[in-house]
Amino acid sequence: FVLSLYIDERGMDMFILTDCCGQKQDGSVLFEHISFKLNKNDRLALIGEEGNGKSTLLKVCCGLETDPLSVKYTKLFHDEKIGILPQRMDSKWLKSTILEYLLKDEPEDEIEIARYNECAHFEQLWVKMKGQVSFLYRDQQIETLSGGEKVRIQLLKLIAQKCTMLALDEPTNDLDIS
Image (cartoon, rainbow, N blue to C red):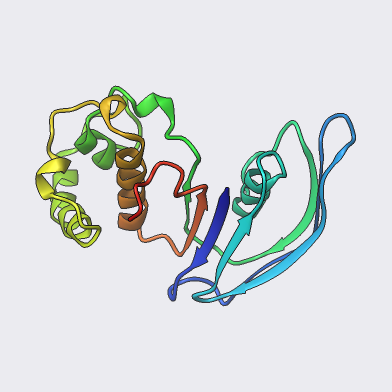
C-alpha cells in the first residue's frame, strides 16, 4: 500500500511536517514523532501494511479532517493548491458520465456552457496519459467503469486543475501496470 506526495515546480519552496503523532480513540498509538521536509519536485512515498496510518498522515498533510483520531503536528507551507486522489472515488459521482465528472464541481450542478471550452485541454492531457479521446465522451455512467478507469479519470481531473501538490492515496490499487 502506497501513499505518495509530489510537489511540482510551481509549488512551494518547502513543505515541513514536524513531530506528527496520531492516536486512536482507545488511546493506542497509530504513529508518533514523524517529521519530514519536501522541496520543489520532491516525491515522498510511504509504504506499509494496511491500518498503519498512511491515509491519516495524508489527511494531515492536506489539512483534512482526521476524526475520530487525535493528531498533533506542526505543518508549514504556503497557499498551495493540493490535489487529492482518495483510495476510492466518492460515490456521489457514480451515476455521472465521464464528461459530467470532468466538467462539474458537484454532481447536482448543471454544466456551464463555458466549461465545454475545457474539453480540448482534457483531450490533450488524456492523450498524454495514453488514453483514447473517444473514451471521454462515452455516454456511460462512472459506476460501470473499471477501477483503473476510475483512477485514471480522477488523475486527469487533478492534473487539469494545475495543482502544485498532489497527494495520492494508494494510487496504483486499481491500475493495470505493465
